[in-house]
Length: 446
Image (cartoon, rainbow, N blue to C red; front, side):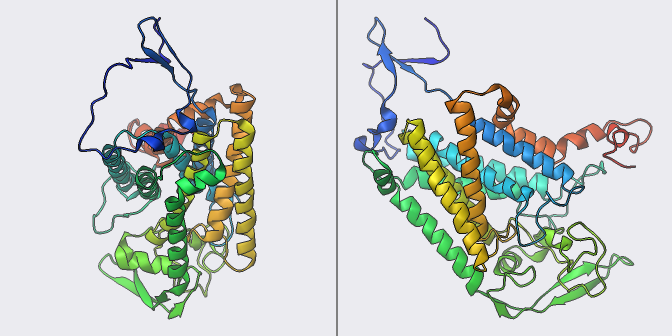
């Protein structure tokens, strides 16, 4: 009987061993996840039923894509849902952590069986390289926006980091941890699961301590940047930013920006940071506006919200998502899963607000520890709600669109959030480039 959901294997056929691979010990394979529905046919062959796909994973990812498109298109009109200019959190600030969280969940499911760790690592590195290159092309300045049919970027000014690059970094480190930092033994409880993955949690702790130590311990010296002159393309205004401090978490003198300026060069950073909408830098805050008369010197300086140091905590977000995925792999009871997810998620949200109250402010641009706790905790709570609705009670019809978008998240992100689709549409015009469909519906301009 042919069925796409069935895989037929001959149990008597020996499986060849790849001597270039590091094989996982046999005892580590025998866990709760190895229990599966199976039977044999008349020929003595094993017929293994594939486990049902976790619908909540796709729905969560699809909902995140919708949220991303919403804040990208409506954020300029509704500043309340746009990225917070500096401290605080808005709807838009949940998008990146939600993506990173669900990447971690998916990695736990993808690597629950590893016949060859070396091959798995090579494939992960290849995926990351592709994602990183995509990010540089789409967010490095190569495309000039929906109001321009030109393209190209000066490699001396190209932006090196971005959303896809951050996801790529988090994906790589989390995947490597899941492939290599996995202990042996059978998982029967939360305690034994913690023991199995103790080295991963040590890695999370090291990342968190390192980030905190650098953010509050590094001395930030005075620095300068150039503002291109409007009157001449050959001259520029050199602006000095006075710092000389340690542990500052404001827009001008934080260690996150300093590290990016040292490693990449200020010319390779994001040139339209969110802090240009702060009260110090905009007369129309929290929206964009003219510079106030006594605006500080740093208001027009580049700053990358997806920088190196801030990406350290992005990896932590992905690792926490990985832990949620482990619960799916080892525990099949709905109640056990829900409790195991809800308690730490709620605890993280509370911890984040406590840290914010104590002075470690919730800040997306710095990806602060409090921001990490609040957003990944919120991601966990939302994931539980979706899981209960679609996987426990089976209410799938209201979420079919989100499920479809979740299965094609990367393509939708590239077409919508990176403005590739509107740029392609704008390429078809009549008589002159300004006469196009985007202008007709009020998106583009001549």
